[in-house]
Amino acid sequence: MPVVTWRIAAGIGIFLSAFWLPFWVTVVLAVFFLYQFDSFYEVFPAFLLVDLLYASKEVRFFDFSLIAFSLAFLLYISMYFLKRTLLAKQ
Image (cartoon, rainbow, N blue to C red):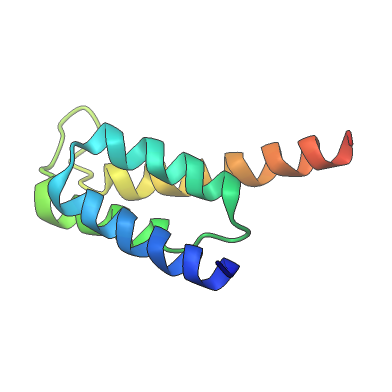
């Protein structure tokens, strides 16, 4: 199958996991897809959807409610640097 088909299936999978699976499954899928594809931007709207559906304001985070979206940003940046260093060592 072409890469585009896998990417569309991955995007649909991450959005379905945001709706029906626990949050940790969505995080594991996001890490896998961020490693597998270049610039997997679908993780941002999926985690924003998780925040909009299930999040509440946290006193621990100064009433900030976009915790999962911030996690997606951190995952994206960390996987970018991890892939870059792993590819540089090959």
